[in-house]
Image (tube, rainbow, N blue to C red):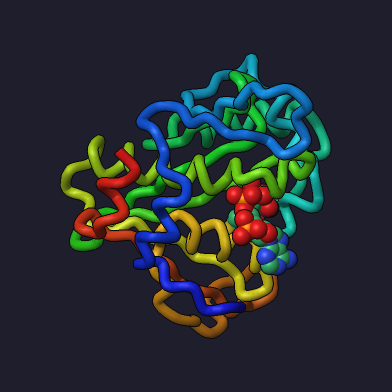
Length: 206
Ligand SMILES: CC(C)(COP(=O)(O)OP(=O)(O)OC[C@H]1O[C@@H](n2cnc3c(N)ncnc32)[C@H](O)[C@@H]1OP(=O)(O)O)[C@@H](O)C(=O)NCCC(=O)NCCS
């Protein structure tokens, strides 16, 4: 993967975000309207939209969960995992859920850190939506959880698209951890990324 310092603020300044929603110019739009990326809580009425990524093998192959084969499975996930989760949001494009993003806290002596995760329905890839969502989540979480020092993200080495998202969002690449966890039963090398509450990029996101 090409080296690209996440501390390069010139690069970050190319796409300054706004607070609760972000205007995004999609390259294939014919008119001059900007699309809006926003994050919001989700509920069971979103399940049909959620199947767009929960039901997609291209999305799940880098995720701990398996592709959902039925709407009932997705409903159970929403009820049992997403709704009770401490910080789980739908990524919306012009109000329609097109993906999801979560921040999972650690506890006890590790409570200074939390882990970021995100997925997007494959037909929306490559438009900068995940990068906007990551910036919005990062700016929100350091305000909502003032005890949080470090937001980290763990990406398998063979997922360069997700690594690029984190680089563009200002996360620092810390290194490769070998055989860090099992993905679909196979041990995987991962790249560890982090953003600290004191990193200058965080204030640019607010
Ligand atoms: C990873 C994911 C969230 C990215 O969403 P996205 O909205 O397409 O991301 P963005 O458009 O903001 O940025 C993607 C960047 O990765 C780059 N990219 C994509 N595929 C790539 C590849 N195979 N090699 C190198 N770069 C790649 C894009 O060119 C873009 O960079 P650029 O703006 O410099 O051109 C989406 O692909 C996804 O949901 N994948 C499946 C689930 C997943 O991997 N989740 C993350 C688990 S850690």
